[in-house]
Length: 122
Image 1: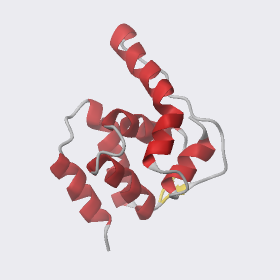
Image 2: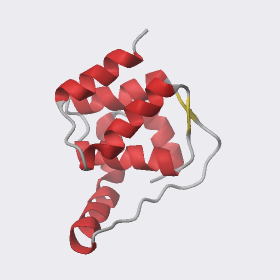
Image 3: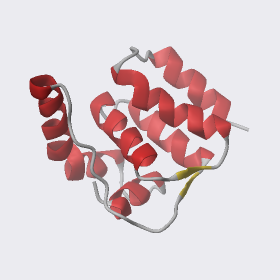
Image 4: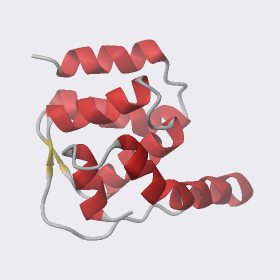
């Protein structure tokens, strides 16, 4: 995943659909490797230090909630944020990103996503 594309999506410069188009093949390849070999590769290019804000996390969660981004892409994106050494603005952002990252192990419900969105709201 290109760091610049991820940041552009988080900042609203790319729509969820545009972002999906950019990363769908990479996400599919990772998921197929997980199914076939038990593990896949998460790849994100280097970029400037980036702090994931509450607005960024809400944009990611809302894209899932409104079905503009598949859960698989959101899960991979969350992994890229975590393994790409992004910083979290606060604990609520950290929890929101980890909710999506761990969602491949623990089924995340629409209610879970909405609760995370609510926690990020002032």
